[in-house]
Image (cartoon, rainbow, N blue to C red; front, side, top):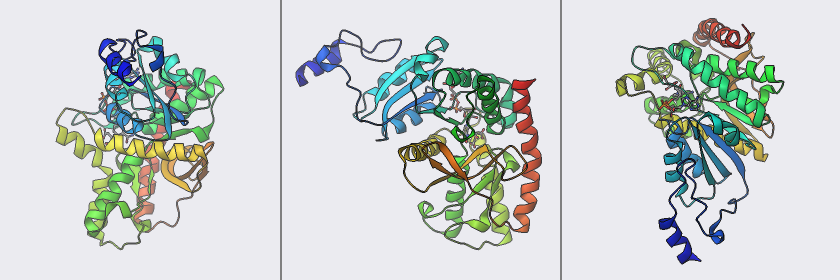
Amino acid sequence: MQRIARISAHLNPPNLQTGESSSLRPASCRSKGGAPGFKVAILGAAGGIGQPLALLMKMNPLVSVLHLYDVVNAPGVTADISHMNTGAVVRGFLGQPQLENALTGMDLVIIPAGVPRKPGMTRDDLFNINAGIVRTLCEGIAKCCPNAIVNVISNPVNSTVPIAAEVFKKAGTYNPRRLLGVTTLDVVRANTFVAEVMGIDPREVNVPVVGGHAGVTILPLLSQVKPSCSFTSEEISYLTDRIQNGGTEVVEAKAGAGSATLSMAYAASKFADACLRGLRGDADVVECSFVASQVTELPFFATKVRLGRSGAEEIFPLGPLNAFERGGLEKAKKELAESIQKGVSFITK
Ligand SMILES: NC(=O)C1=CN([C@@H]2O[C@H](COP(=O)(O)OP(=O)(O)OC[C@H]3O[C@@H](n4cnc5c(N)ncnc54)[C@H](O)[C@@H]3O)[C@@H](O)[C@H]2O)C=CC1
Ligand SMILES: O=C([O-])CC(=O)C(=O)O
C-alpha cells in the first residue's frame, strides 16, 4: 500500500486544472477527507497574502478541507500546499466557472482577493478595482454558502465590508454576525510596537485597536493596553503614528512590489483560527474586528468582539477613553462615515 502510494506520486501528476492528483491514482489511495474539522475557502489564494495564508491554514488542526480559489495560478499553489502532511484535504479552483464549486459547503470563507497598494496610493485608491471583485465573490457566497463566516481582507476594508453587507442584503442572506472585516494586523502591529517601547515580550501585550482599517480610522487605545503601561506623550504620539501608518511603512519598503503579505497572512490566520475556535464553541474567544455595530452612530465600527458558534456574538463597548483618544475617535468617525457610505452606494445606487 505504501509502495503503491509512492509509485503513484510519480506516475500521476496533479490535475492541471485543480492541482488534485489525477484519476489514474489507484482507488486504494483516494483521499478519505482527513480529520473531522471545518471547511475553509481562501479566495485570492495565489496572491501575496493568499499563498502564506494557505500554508498556515493547511497547518491548522481545526481545518479538514481547504479550498484554494484564484483567477490565476491556483493549480500550482494547490499542488504545492497539498503535499504538506497535515490533516486538511486541499482542493484548487481556477477562475470564475469554478467559484461555485470552491464555495459550496464552506464554514469559513477568507477573502484576500484584489490589488494591493503601491507607494503614494491610499487604500481608497484600490476601491475602483477591489469593490467589483468583492461584490462578485460575495454574490457567490450568498448563493453557495450563505451560512459561512466571511473574513474580508481586501482593501479598502472600511468600504469592502459595507459592500459585502449590501450584496448579502440584496440576496436575502445577510447576517451581520457572520460578516467580519479583518483588522487583526493593526492589533498585531500595535502589540509589537508597544512591546518594543516597553522592552517586554510582544506575545504578552494586548492593545485594543478600534475604528477602521485606514490611516486615522485606525485608533489604538493605548490607555487600555494589557498589561497596563503608562506612556509619555512623546511615546503616545510615536506609537499612534506608527500603528496608523504601519501599512504605508511596508508599502514604501517594498517600493512598488506590493504591501504587507507575510505579517498579514499571520494576522489573517490568527483571526481565522479565532473564528474556528468560536464555531467549535470555545468560550471567551475575543478579537478586534470591523463589524456591523451600535457602539457608535456609524453602521460599522471595529471593536473587540466575542466570537462564537454564530460569528460575532457580542460586541464590546469602547471602554473609557482619554482626551487624546476622544479626539482621535472624532477624526476616525468622520473618515469612516464617508468610506462606509461609498461602499453602500456602490451596491445600492
Ligand atoms: N485587511 C488588511 O489588514 C490588509 C489587506 N490587504 C489587502 O489584501 C488584498 C490582497 O493583497 P495581496 O495578496 O498582497 O495582493 P496580490 O496581488 O499579491 O494577490 C491578490 C490575488 O487576488 C487574485 N484575484 C484578483 N481578482 C480576483 C478575483 N476576482 N477572484 C479571485 N481572486 C482574484 C489575484 O489573482 C491575486 O492572486 C489587497 O487589496 C490589499 O490591499 C493587504 C494587507 C493587509
Ligand atoms: O497598507 C496596505 O495597503 C495594506 C494594509 O492594509 C496594511 O498593511 O495594513
